[in-house]
Length: 259
Image (cartoon, rainbow, N blue to C red; front, side, top):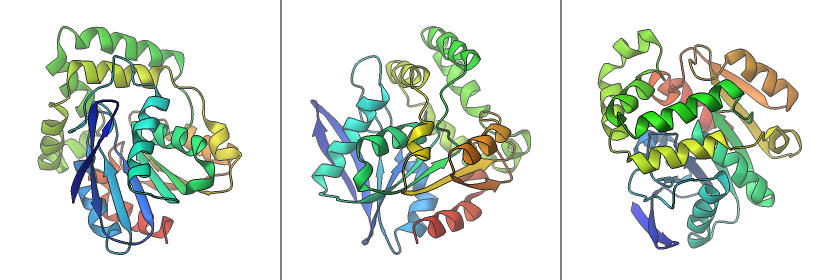
């Protein structure tokens, strides 16, 4: 069921499916709640699954020109409050994982578990921060090509051919992103702090799902991160978009995670 609430004079859009323990799904950059369709179908058989359009994505509008992780989290907290959810699991893909960490840090007693899907608790290194600044400049002049380039680069070369139809559908969704939304989210990611402590210092269930061939996040660094923060690590065979490239395996991992 599609729902929305008002937050700071904008609408936050989300879906709410199934009954049982609550699972909050947070999509990644240039995505929206529809990315979770394959996951929702399985998880909602025995759980209540809420997938939220993050600020500036899908059917949720922007709030200013920088979407800090705390602002993303405030919007999600407003949804959770409206649904009167006391405890929940958090599953975040890429950007959604960064937000899930911030949300967990703000609501430790309410979190049953957190899963970082193709995501990290590490901050951007200097090279990545510089790339984000250049992308924000490019967004103001050649936005469509930037979106296409950014999105296609999330997939391995073999996946681009094997999942051509699914990628075209997801790219079509990404093309609806507005320039302001792109820059606001990209700035939020550039400015985010290291959040290793959220994993290392809390006792809720923790899982990192990493792609062995992820072109965005170093698999070796994910292994190091999991070890340093005492977080379980599961490895999938492909790249950054596990919900497309490794859907069946992902479904099984997430069902086990929330069991």
